Length: 453
Image (cartoon, rainbow, N blue to C red; front, side):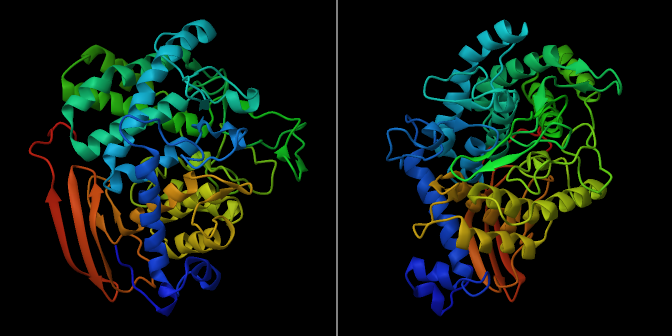
């Protein structure tokens, strides 16, 4: 990848960070893209453990957040660049962990909820625990398994590997079975919702939810996050049910079960626009207690999901913009990466670069490792790689969109080897902001026509 060099591009990295203004060193963005790929290679190789919060660079006996796998965003973000960054082999440890989670996850589904299938919450470790942990405000997020399953489907979309899909189809089906048993009808609206539910780590503005801050521990609250049918839950289940049904079609199995899944999907609570024009985070039109917040969980449907777009759902896209403007720039490394990717999906390269510039000056070390609450945390490093790729090339809407959101300062450049859905590898060359040439190479001998993505 080459996004263009200036004299600043040849300075030591610490000086490049200090002098960067978002526009005067385009190849600093390219360096961060490659750094994220480079960090994923050693921290997640076939036969090893998946990349956790610190990758393999934890130096402490009692590390921040126990150096575990937090799956209300962080573990998933670690693997955002794996497929698009042409490192699909590096996702193998994640797939193995998902398979292993079904063991304890089946017991938790049965014993905690009286349900079939398997369930996994917001956090696990090397022993693959699947039960709620860390208190109800965090542990009530019971859609962690559903989010992880999206990586199984994405791998199939990028690789076209039918044997992989066949191997992991039972995992996806087991996750669906749990939610078919777990969903309940909302007594007022009639929609099917998760209950209990939570929008990860964010506190709605209702009486009694009084946020207070501690400079050492960060934010804390005597209030609660527990709700019914959070927006992210509904988005995740919409994706999970859709992918499961498509997989059944491709593999020509489970016809009656597929029909039940699609029937249930249509009854899920829909996304809604609140009184301030924002995409609602909760089923009710509650605001959030804090002025801003690092999690933008209800924007899963924009990125990495594919339920919100300028073309297909313009009203929801406008609602997503209101959320992003409200959350602003201030947060932490992984949140900057997520917001950068969301703005790329909305084709706003200026806002995407604003978040990258803020990240460079506030949320990464001179080493380019990302920061969360003053601690090294690798998810933002990986997320930035994925966001840069999203600015260059998008493939989530059944088409390949080249130079989807390139920055004004990336006047001329090229990228070679980026991967897109459908089993293609792309090479792009542009000059003065205009596409000069493109090469799209199919890496597949065969790709199933039954997959319409």
